[in-house]
Amino acid sequence: MVKKLVQNDNSYQERAIAVGVEIGKPTSDFTIEDSLNELCLLAQTAGIEVVATLTQKLEKPNPQTYIGSGKLEEIKAIANELGAHIILFDDELSPRHLRELEEHFDQTVRIIDRTALILDIFAQHAATREGALQVELAQYEYRLPRLTRAWTHLARQAGGGGGRAGSVGGVGLRGPGETQLEVDRRDIRRRIAHLKEELEKVKAHRRQYRRRRKKSGIPVVALIGYTNAGKSTLLNVLSNANVYVADQLFATLDPTTRRVSLSRQHEILLTDTVGFIQKLPTHLVAAFRATLEEIAEADVLLHVLDVSKPTAHQQAQAVFQTLKEIEADRLPIFTVLNKIDLLSDPLQTLGILEQYPNSAAISALTGLGIDELIRKLDDFLFTRQHPITVELPQRETYLIQLFSREGMVEQINYSGSHVVIQGKIPGRHLAKYTPYLLQTDEGRIIEREPTP
Image (cartoon, rainbow, N blue to C red; front, side):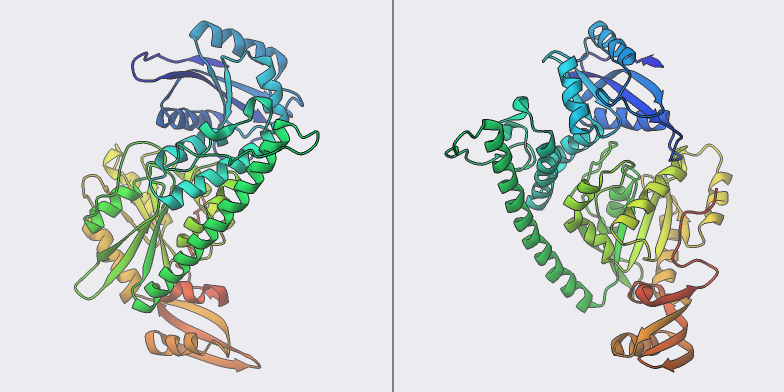
């Protein structure tokens, strides 16, 4: 299926054809059309105009060119007709597929897959040294297995220096019989090793920063959500911050932490992080682990969900999948249903709220529901006692004493080297006990995606 789109010659520098392939039976609630629509938004964020979309269903990818030979010729004809110089694939292409596809097009047409496009957007939005390091590492790890003669001397294309400049490193002297390609591969591996060392330093610095925050006793709440769900807008509203906000995917890449007062007695540290997205490659998650640890080390996750999107349920699933990958899926979650001002029927919100026991409906843009969100979040973190049952090692004297001091112990049993405590605890302390959790209350403190 081919769909030609309205062209806008003045707004974009480059034109592209977006290609989506459905392999076998669908494994996600995202339809191929939903995924292609998102790819078009990614392209728009990168400054690329998608002039046509094309889809194909296959039992398995073509071993050479990923798509069928007939479809490949169709793409060539459309690209020639519409003046497109980029072919965007909605999946990550293997090194072989990329090489074969490049050989089928002349040098005026570039083949870019979803991962490369996301990396390009990340490079544009990395505003700090940490962000630039993470982007550059992800770029090199992506490009290394795809390195060909046409990809040598990658200084212009690599990340670093704000995401747009960088260097593979000095070429130096070649060994006997060593090709330029081998030199470039060796230099890239050396650069990858250096970047990992630098990111370990960042990781150590963040670890020290988190220790200081924990000593303050102020709960850390991490904003999570699908990209463009409105996290940065909510951070600005709650903290009077001035975080960059734009109606585009991945507008915010680097983490930002602000102090927020929920009441006269209670305050939190609110951290905004990079948004999630479906088909986020594992190596990309690994490259951004230093940043994503801000999520894993939080006391509570504030999940911002754009309820105006028809794919809200699927986006929530993508968020929970990423939480699982970074081992943060057992943290307590408070859900924020955002952009309710865009709903035609307000009753829709009530139905969704019933699916999330710990939730609030708001519009971060207009301020609707913000006061109620603050009240509910304050209650969740500081006032309400949440029933839990935990099995703690007796050596965890701090957690045992904390439960007695801050919570309500209803039953305690000592068994060998462990102690089982049943009782209630404030929401701000739940994350400390999740590694030892036996069960939660019926209200599902450790909240998950509800059944639609």
